[in-house]
View (tube, rainbow, N blue to C red):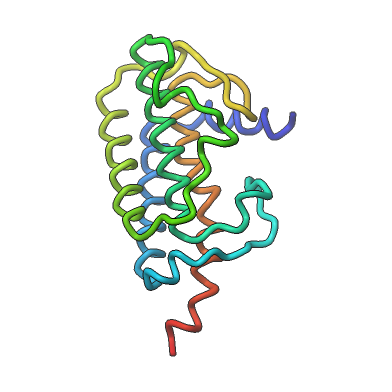
Length: 180
């Protein structure tokens, strides 16, 4: 309950531009991490310790699975924002099972780097074309309450940042191998 209130308050005071910058920064960080590993390492699952925001079934992913998950979630959030902002009933990519439909395949590879870059770039371009995101139609987030399009845009960046620590941990497991 406290976390829900904090997230709602944080998103309320975050501007669209700031949320966009946060998403750009997170993407930049993921791209830098991708440059630090070999493709075979990016496909290797690594179990991370318990981390804030990670469900137990998300702790054993490879770097590319983390990117795939982020790409899936990014695509979904973008669809939600667009449909809320233009007053449509949620449909298609905006309607998912948040527990099962966001899980990455086990056989994803380095193509996920380009996919995530494309999803973030498309999202930022789309958000830039929309009018007011605040105060319109809303839909519930599975954990943090009801969001309008603006709060979903903030969630887009927030979600990318949640998985950054996981990605950094995974890449760090290969750092000594790559220095040899």
